[in-house]
Image (tube, rainbow over all chains, first blue to last red; front, side):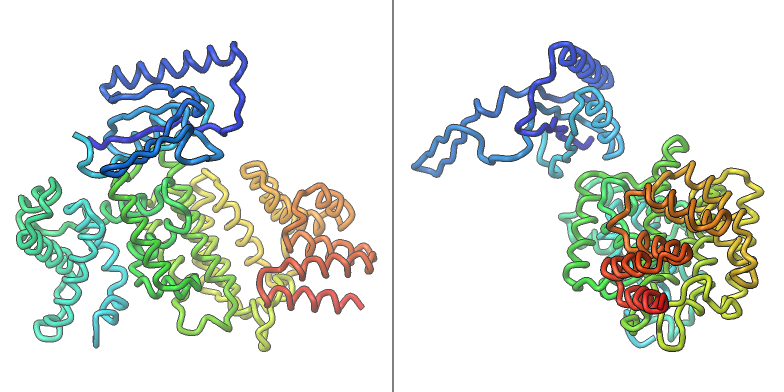
Length: 118
Length: 403
């Protein structure tokens, strides 16, 4: 079955929602996660620490450059992701719809390249 | 039939149906297209000798399927599950007309999948459903041929890589998914209808192609009144085309058109479709726009127009799709029913300052209220914003006629 990456996108300058709302978001997101697991669609995923904690490693056979921060300084960041299985793009979009409604952020749906995942 | 492109032009309709059917077997649009092109090349060689077969599309599908199987046997790298499945099918399995229709409808929904950009939806639909060739589509949209080819390749890659399904949406999803399908066809129509005649030489007529697509949709989805409404709208609009330009190639507005030039056959067919829609009693935006066009087509002169009927239909349309454009058209009808003053009041509440027709309608209402200087200024703004030379010219003429 095809694999899809669902990325939680948010603006880089977004501020964290107030605690009440955050609790609601976490609970709703957990519900979608539970549904993915129950239907056997969940592969892997989770929330990511702030982008300021990133390190970029760029290496050749005999040299390595280590940089503090992300590779791309983007206006949008990825706050978390899920790798799911779905029969086709329509099913993946339906899971993305439910996830987006829960996280209150846009969700990017991206297929894995054919045959790249075991 | 001198070359492959000639055959493809003759068999445009067959091309779309054949690709749809072979795609179900192969699960890959690129392979399906290659196979159908192989089959068409064979047709050029054999039909002049053996005669045209009784079922052209059946012959093309069977031949394409056999060609694809031959090709896959030769190229062992293409051994995914679709290939295996295709090889298992008996090559001489008869082609059923009903199955081909289902395949074509699946392909329509794949081409117009909301995960594809509208420009890609249009290009795919014209290529794979209408059977137009890539250079024809490029010329029709005034886009460089490599750009259009690239757009098609990218879209087909996405269909394959993202697993965009090849199926008709379930009933619950159908209203949402039908919307982009109808929008693609109407976009193609407007692109053809609004194009000025001057640069149309050697281009396929997109308005004709859209009507052909519209007929296909009605044929494939006879129970969808909006598909029928769209076809009616296109036919009733197309009927006015002979009157839309005068002998000098200048645009003529609806009230000034010589209605004797309207295509009576298209009017008759469009009105009949509107009546069928009314009997169904499931109105939608395309059906309402078609009904408005039908009211206009009923009036032997502009003065005979039943404007209260037009206004009632715009009220209904605005309740269903409350866009500024619909509100603008409603103002035109309001002016005819209740005079220019209340219409201008309603118009000035709209947020359409960047739209040339807003200023054109405004200018017309101001002129009727005797505010000539304001009208002239509004025409000037409208002309500056107009997207085509023909429209700009018409607006300048209107401005000059104010005196």
